[in-house]
Image (cartoon, rainbow, N blue to C red; front, top):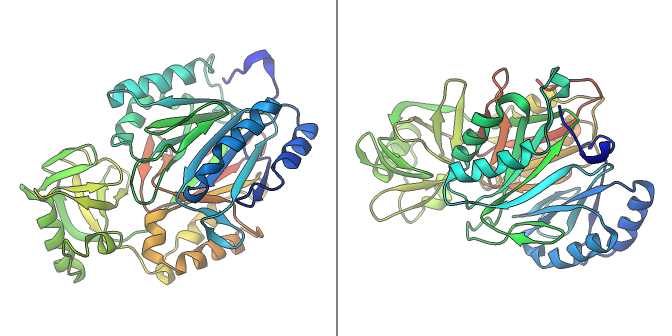
Length: 395
């Protein structure tokens, strides 16, 4: 069961939200009004990369008021007018969650152990009912090469004592930037964690069809695939793209085309999307997210927006009586759909009967595998987070 210091009220997810302009006009008044009504509040801030210079002002404002601050920098924001490189989302928790900000360690196992220690310090006893399972929301720097291994290491120690959710932050250029912050620090190459006692529904969908060809990553390390079926990975990727989908892939058009034809890691339950983002002279291919050695692969083809059932699948899983909604949309998915990505968001808002969606573009997405409780790392997905009504358990 979740235990918070001095038995403060239950921390819940997404109690209020406000979009500020990139000048942060209205920041002081918003914080003063919110704190007067909710003295124990905490704050999550989502910034676009172009607004990273606003971090010091946000930190100072929260330090002056003693407001716990957690934040991350993403490629763009999701706003009422669509995707935007401007502004700042302030997400209020009426009762501040416990949180932590950690730099990564030398190995994935060491990083996982640091996260486990932070979480266990905030957990006591055993979970007695599904509705009592807290949610661990993690924001990783997307530059970390072994996020899947970190999640596995966390699960091996915590098992089903928490539900797992999260996203990757950072720059869409895949260049390193300090993208995680609290009231005191800003860092890259790390992880930010928040622990919520309320059950949180975490819906993650991509709806990508798969090719017929089954391949094996005969040599891989972290997010780098060296060889597929004993041959240079780029060579096989190029060949299968042409044969299965008629895509003429070259090193010159690689980045523009690869987002439309990601690799899929075959698991016992489903296929996890891995978007290629770079290649080396030796023919190895770098993806967003790990590809385990000897894992089975299929080539995927990103769907046309008119053929994608993602919006319907998400809407069918959301709860009308639940709390506020926070959405994250994969940057690679937006690159594929281009202008039609806005149409997908509009359709989602309409299906959910909400006037506007709040969130950010992400560089990787995390959910919990139903029934077994194991965390999974995705690409090309849409993530919806919603606080569930009291007493309701996540799937």
